[in-house]
Image 1 (cartoon, rainbow, N blue to C red):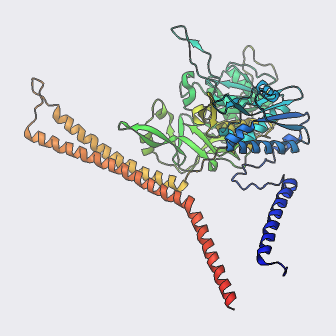
Image 2: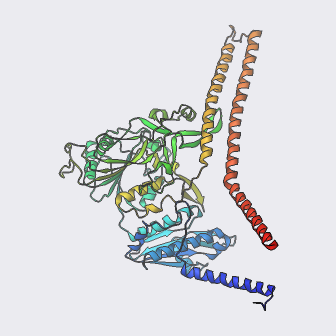
Image 3: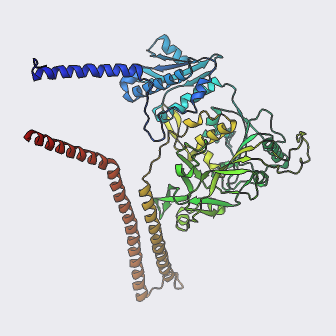
Amino acid sequence: MQRFDSRTLGIIGIVSAAVLFVAVNVVSNTWLRNLRLDVTEGASYSTSAQVKPMFASIKEPIVVRVYFSEAIGRASPRHAEYFQRVRDLLQQYAELANGKIKVELYNPEPFSDVEDRAVGFGLQAVPLGQLGEVGYFGLAATNSTDDQQVIPFFNLERAQFLEYDLAKLIYSLSEPDQPKIGLLSTLPIEGAPAMPNMMGMPQQQPRPWAVLGQIRDTFAIETLNPGITAIPADIDILMLVQPDGLSDAAAYAIDQFILRGGKALVFVDPNAESAGMGGPPGGGDKQGINKLLTAWGVRMVDGQVVGDLEAAARVGIQAEGRPVAADYVAWLQLRAGHFDTSDAITGDLQQINLGTSGVLEKVEGATTTVTPLISTGLQSMRMPADKFIGLPDVVTLFREFKPQNKAEILAARISGPAKSAFAEAPKGEGIATAPHLSESKQPIQVVVVADTDILGDRFWTQNSSFLGEQVVVPTADNANFVINALENLTGSPALSALRGRGVKSRPFELLESIRRDAEMQYRQTEQSLTGRLEELQKKVSAMQVREDGQGQAILSDEDQRTIESYRGDILATRRELREVQRALREDIDRLQGILTFVNIAVVPILFGLGLIVFAAVRRRRRRRSAAA
């Protein structure tokens, strides 16, 4: 080494480092391809252990064809990166399936046979320029019986749900015989047929709720009439949505279905806001379903809606003729702390939105076990359901809210031995003649939710336009909860671990708490000032109504001075009210700015200062060593 000067040694070192860098990359791509480290919260990029057996149990071959135009990758680096993620994830699935899944990658160039096959599968063409060039980024998969599943285009807005979309697609091809759901609902969950208006033209009718499409991706659905006298033999699970007005025959059929081992997912609501034209918000006669719930060990508190101060949704309202934002205590945005994380149904959910939900209570002496799945926080309060019919006063509800320091049950799992709600079979034509069961043959499995608005589109979706088509983008995990519950009740929760990974709502909790406390104080001050303002306006009106016989107002000089004084007080009160509102907004903005700075800038600054200190200490040690 002494024969080389420092410059030559430096060049040799750089070349050696470059060779070592290439070698490490080659070795890592070859030997460490399947080694992954996921440090994201909730392991968003990891394949769940529950899902792996689903791929290992695939018996017939599945061919997955991915069509990606390289021109799209050149025009949009984000799509190129997304394609790599799709490819890597499918290759993982192929390895888990032990050769039963074959992944094929195609570049559909214009006017090629590959493009023709992509068009034949129904993939979406995306225009790339003004010269008519188009590109494709979609997927088509088939099984040995020519069943077909297609993703027309990998929309970036659904990138967070990629793993679920792919696993669900493969699952539907590997399990063509879907479990059947018996849907019984008095709400317009399935939409309504187009009816002609007075001009003879069809008018727009409610569309099927988006959650129904999500369910149909995994399950077959059979609609049941509320007047049923027997449950069809091929039904695996009953899904009851506001089953008002159940006859004794229908209630008995459901009762015996559960006692014979059937499963049920039940949604009941004291104020069904999503009823629309399908019925009154409060629903109809609940005597039948209440009788069943009581036999199963739970009851919904009659005529009560629960609010939660901490989980209240921020909504826009009109106050004093202008739009303002306020906390609506009856619309709840529930996050991880409100869920039972040990249960497969709710363990991986991030956020669920409810609207004017009811309250569930355990029945004393019940033989079943009632396990809360979703609950409010301690800052909750029961309120009469009558307050929410029509247009509720959001500000007054917030102002009058008094937390009861008690968590209320919003959804629960019921399991264990149960007794029949009927001493004997009711009399009537068409009632099943099977032997009457007075108790369950095995532990029952029922999930009850005290809200139906959890299913309504406006509580968990927003529509986004893409290439002229409407794309439903989830904003909460409401549908995930429903699918998780159905899959869990069928005994096939393979896909449930993939749900709830896409919705990440991470508010500044400290900011929300301080903002809520400040707004509570503001509302109290606002109430005082508003009352004073109304009193002054009444005094002015009372003085102005005194008239003479000809309809002219009678005002003395003293009255005019008094009115001017009152009007001055009114202006001062309004000015004070605006000042309170402005101060509240300034305090919140200032605090939000500080928290944003701390969360975003402080850590890099501290890291940089640490590096400077480290470099200074190291330099000082070198000087000491050189001096010695």
